[in-house]
Length: 507
Image (cartoon, rainbow, N blue to C red):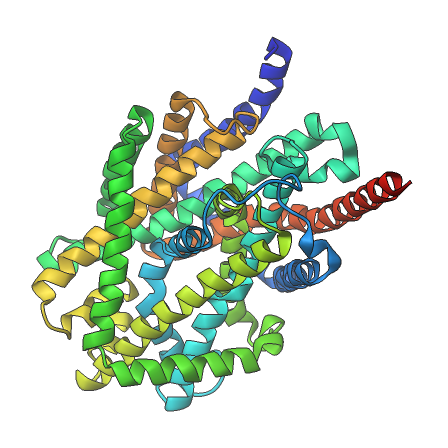
């Protein structure tokens, strides 16, 4: 690589790093000023542009499913003679694994109970609000989320594997701006994708570390506070950064295996001891309600305050995660057709999430009834303790409580380690094996960013994390909307080239 090309690739790194460092310094030295800005940004975006987040995800849904069902669905993510790298079973297993993360562990009990107690419409604490709560959770964690990831992954996989372009979001804009993707416009797109990824991951790490801290308090009485959470983040950051820089692949694989087996183990355990029949009834009934209200709920804005705090936050969070999760699903899908890719990525992890949420949410409602409101009381006091309060109502809590913390820690380390790799790749010109020092920098930067958001947010840390995702996702959401048109344009040109080749060969 020439020095000129190297400097050009490093532009994204320098600009992205500068933005992150300025943000961290701002939060450390002027926390009250940052807090005011955070509140203003949250109010502005959710009030004036909340409709755009909902509309954007609806567009992603139509585009992804429309392309998959069209004649373009047969186009391969790779050359025409490329074969899939993994068997169907291996591919499905990895897609399921991609659906498990800190967010599902954090919200699987807390969110259903919070909607049950304070629904967006109607009276709380009723059978109707319970059914509505589960339907909302399915909506937030279901097909809409994974369609966003499918769009991001489709852009990365198509332009990398079929067109041989760098593994960067900017590559998806080649049909629109041509060689300018290698200039300032392309670099700006990549900077915004890094910006969205950093804040999206910081939100997840903040939620995970908060749940670890409250778990320690709930089980062993170690007081949870913003300072305690920050210490946990710092320790975790040191662990996953050292692992990333040292190249401890066996240790990271072991962490991934621990997460997988604990996740499956908890699902089986909670299903067996949380009321199997009730959970199955919950799953089937909620799935029916979810499908029945699919279109109406996609664009529902009947309670603007509630939508801003929940649905818009989730849509922004998924958009911010699109480069991260999209990179993962793209890398394992070379040789698949677009139709296979879109349907598998959109439906399989969503299906897993439905089963997970039905088990955890259904068990929480049943344990709450048996314990005469113990889960409700825990959620009202501190919703981050919801999972531990539920496990406490079941057998073997002295074992499952600590194991739940281990599961959260493993999910934390896995997400952070993967994110450092993606961020390093995005800031090194799409290098599929980025420099370890660069990975180390992004590991430290993610930890510092999360700590700043927790400290600035204080007792209202969730709002700071929500605002970070919503604000960071806004410009990237606009990029993704344009990217949808660019993908369609590229597919149309691709088909024309194939047809021309067929005609020429025939002649």
